[in-house]
Image (cartoon, rainbow, N blue to C red; front, side, top):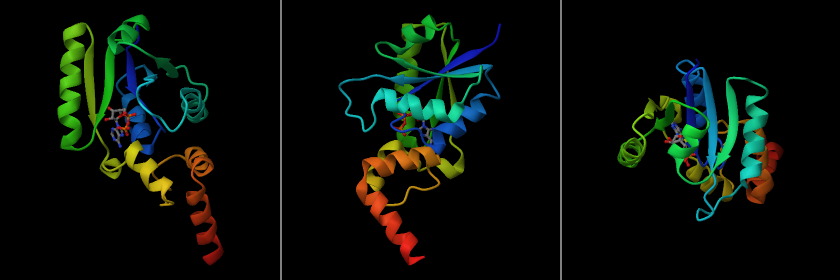
Length: 172
Ligand code: ADP
């Protein structure tokens, strides 16, 4: 039986840092389910449907990768899809404390499920959806930090990002 991991997150939007974790996770697991947490209390830029669409466009038709949405307890979702592990990425120390607490809580809730951490690729240390959205909202270039399709979607949301790009093209 293959080993399946759930990679949970908000993916609002998916970044190249997330993609790096997914690609490296595929060397360890047979299948990864990218699970978008549907948390109505958390304000998001993209709807869950939009986030799913962007991820589907990136992963295509692969039987080793799947995208899903979950709400409620993560460990319940992991058990429901018969996965064995939770995959998480670690960037700075600031991630560590929260991730540590979360992993311990999830372990307490279901001891059969292990959390596996992958250290971020050095290129993606500062790649964070929240900071990307913030920069993009003020027209700062985030090219190279997100896939091209996601960049396009960000431009649709943030006119300043589109205008700045147009201006640069005209200058260059
Ligand atoms: P973010 O923290 O960027 O808003 P998510 O909440 O969607 O992203 O994070 C889902 C998981 O992916 C978390 O474990 C997070 O630490 C990890 N992750 C996010 N960005 C990166 C990155 N650049 N490198 C490694 N892991 C990352």
